[in-house]
Length: 369
Ligand SMILES: CC(=O)SCCNC(=O)CCNC(=O)[C@H](O)C(C)(C)COP(=O)(O)OP(=O)(O)OC[C@H]1O[C@@H](n2cnc3c(N)ncnc32)[C@H](O)[C@@H]1OP(=O)(O)O
Ligand SMILES: O=C([O-])CC(=O)C(=O)O
Image (cartoon, rainbow, N blue to C red; front, side):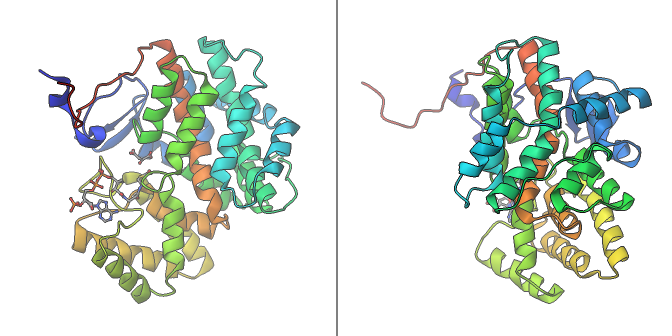
């Protein structure tokens, strides 16, 4: 058989790696993370539990989760050069590009950069996860001519992240909802960004390079960039009927509606989106204003009827972030920060059992006769 006979556009359904990290089990309708159902975990566990589960392979005890929190907090500081470089970027720079730049710069500070051992890789994963709130928030703040903000180590990792974003100490409910969003975004089998990071890692490239590639992948609006696009779209309408008309017009123009559809969940709603929809309801109830939820539900109904398409996580994460007072340009960087836990687990797994990715092509050019 010729290599070209096995070509599948977009690699749909192609198995690209062997992994013990996660699986979208379409038969059982579960997002399986190291043997656990992500949706079940979202009811009782925190993002810090997921960080441990992804990097260490087992569910942490309370003491182990506390140790992870401490480890992340110990790594909150970022080199001042990173801040100086962020200040030099054009003000139009998107915080995703700030994040990508900062991660690249950090490679130069790693004294054991060429050490691919399990311990060295895990240490740099914890270090990066500790640094990401400051990188993410301050790349946004610096680009918007605001002073950098210091972390508050008294708060939990995710409460501090939200505090740094908004400048206000979150309520317990806000902190829990934000933590749940990080947990839900933390890992999802083999999306484009994870594939990208594994392809890069497979040349023996370092974690910073693999993550920088993943930021670039995740920025695209067919992937992580969709959460920002969803919020811009919702903000174009100010009532349910205006939003319905907006969607109808986009469909007439054959535009893709951001936040709908998924390569794996084609015929049903992404279960993570259902969880975020519950959080949106909580936030709307508290505010006594259900407009955003009503608009989202109307969009959901319209898309099911018109296209047989259902919301993915980005569709409901976007309005939740809006209700938490998060600037839109931080939605995708937050997704990336959370996903860094899963990405690092994949990069480590690739380094531990590596074979170079080097596929073939279906050639459509002229043959040499
Ligand atoms: C957390 C995440 O990263 S989830 C993904 C976030 N991305 C988005 O929300 C962007 C919008 N969605 C999409 O573009 C797609 O559904 C993707 C990229 C997520 C999946 O893409 P694919 O699996 O390649 O599906 P593909 O784009 O081929 O779509 C199949 C059909 O459904 C249609 N379709 C898919 N998604 C949408 C959409 N959001 N709006 C309108 N039509 C859509 C396509 O136009 C296509 O129709 P056709 O066969 O008549 O041409
Ligand atoms: O799985 C995918 O292709 C995209 C996605 O939902 C994610 O990365 O969370």
